[in-house]
Image 1 (tube, rainbow, N blue to C red):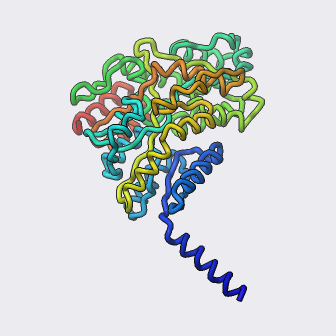
Image 2: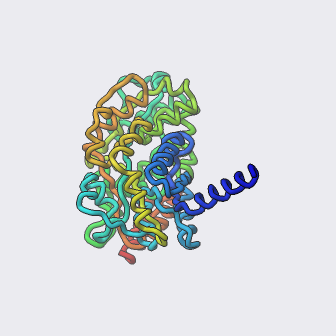
Image 3: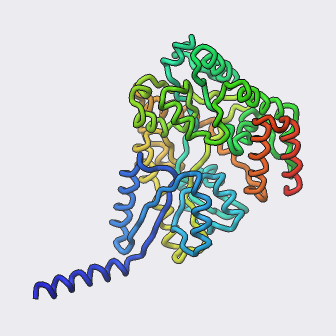
Amino acid sequence: MKKMLLTAALIAASTASAQKTQLEFWTISLAPLFNDEMNRLVAQYEKENPNVELKWVDVPANAMEQKLLAAVAAGRPPAAVNLSSDMAVKLVQQGALEPLTLSAAQQKLYFPNTLKTFTFDGKVMGVPWYWSPKVVAYNTEIFRKAGLDPNSPPRTIQTMIAAAKQIKDKTGMYGFMPNINGINFIYLFQEAGLPVIKGDKAVFNSPEHVKLVQSYVDLYKKGYIPEDTMRRGYAAATELYSAGKLAMLITGPQFILRVENDNKDVYAKTKVAPYPINIAGNVIHTGLMGFTLPKGQRDKAAAQKLALFLTNDVNQLAFSRVTKTTFPSTVKASSDKFFKQGGGDAVSQGRLVASTELKKAKDLTLVYPDASKLNKVFKDNIEAAMAGQKTVKAALDDIVRAWNTSL
């Protein structure tokens, strides 16, 4: 009898589980640092929605686009996917995302400029999540060895480059690893006050644009920036800094936590300074993260409900408290006193520094046709210029010519 009752209970439990709606959401590179917070979100959502079984999947940034396109093509997309604004542009153009249907009240939860970032041709293709202006974490010990004052870090791009040269010359270690891989020069142009597209024409092959790119080519050729800058970018920079072999790390302040986890000795020597602005532009490219709905949803209403839950005031504030350095895109959460709290450690410094930079923060992602194809043209030609296979002028001319054929 007991055996029959146990069997019946197991069948009932299995049936109940089978009747639950299975939902999945993906994030970018949050594991393992933020596992606890993501698991809290899962538990909270399942508590509020007992008919749902929610699964969280974390995906490396460099694998997200292909993994999502494969899931959409296979007819098995997740309910909600965390994408950066530049990823969203490409995936919207490839028809891989569904528009959301937000009421006026739902739209008002978010800052208008952040919601606008995920709006294409009047359609809201995602809800904004978190962002944080870049800061510079720097190793005070390497600064001292190079004869630089750790209490007076560089404040402009020009003085940062000069400091990086001095560090390499005096210590043999790299001063910094600039964010110039992929299409990042598009953001550097805008930070320098230089136009990228005017009307429907690409215009970034002027003498000023050439001079800016040439300055980094020269640093690369003379060994002032690491050889794998163009291949591995941010990941390599974080590894080098955590190993005590890089003086300055340009990073989102939330990732200073990675340094603390990887090397507490280096973390103890770390101070945080504002991202050195280019005086001509006086703007800091600040990529915005959001949640989007992939194409082919079986239950679009359930998917949208999940995206709104993940980005609501309460959960955006909770996420910021865990990362300690990211900022919400919702109006109410952003006004919390947490963002004004200080502290002597590098993570607290990062939050305070980034909070002062928010007024200069702007997502400089541009929307243009055939983004995936044009971005590849841009990347390939910049890499050719860095490798000395083309002059900078020839590389920029070739990119502009190819872009203007499509624009």
